[in-house]
Image (cartoon, rainbow, N blue to C red; front, side, top):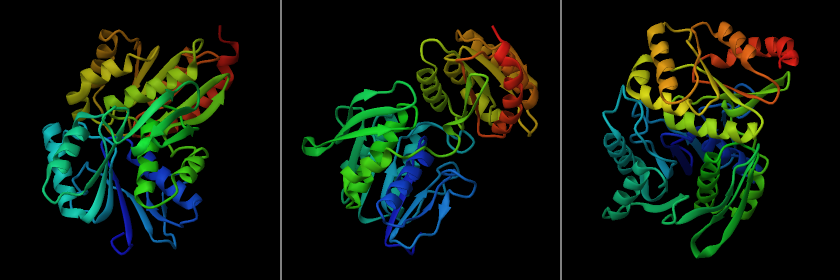
Length: 366
């Protein structure tokens, strides 16, 4: 990456993979032959990385282990900032501090930071960068009316999303996405703005994003069986859970229900964010809590189940075994429902069992 003349680092608590994927996709469709390293596959296995012949390099840069500090870049995209990775950070302020340090060390002189300001951490970082003497160029985006680039006329119904992205001077671009979830509009906004900073044609970029199907396991369609639509979600933070379940609700519509099979990523995260996980998961009509290939105390799963119920949700089943969780989920589902396989672990593999059982049972469900 350091050897390329135009380096874009995509960072943030949420949305990194989708935004980096959108940038790589759009640049490729615009004929730029970019190199890229995305933390998820774009479609087939291995498709998240590519060595192109062009001058652009797009990289998803992760803050979980502070490896983003000092990353060499010409454009820094910060989708949002919130408190995450409690194994590494004490609070949100520390996360913001480390992002600020990372840009100070790694963003070249005259570089640009594209910052989402709908999150409190993103707004704080943008304020610090703007106020800094000899700081970078800062371009902000979001639903916020104070953003330089603002999303308006938003529609998040069904399997797609649309909005108008209004830039400085009032220029508007109609975003029309295949990907589900209103949060994907923010990722698309970050993509279009970054391409504008890089000198690309915004109108052409918006047109190409119409054909982007998302990156793997970011609330992407897995299959449909027995009239039940199944989606894969990598969500492992309460904010991500809330966003993906809102997307699932828009797909299910008025008649369908949302059933979530949730696999926590680890005991520390579950301890720190347990209450918030319970509140976020309560947006489902039914939740089945399951374990992972790594040892996970059943007591922790049961505590999460209790928190979901206390928040007004319905979690009647704790099944540590993923295959058994899939069978239990199939018994709950009926045609028209949306099932979300959620978590960063191996929960997606339970889809094979779920698909088989759904085909056998749901067709006769009442």
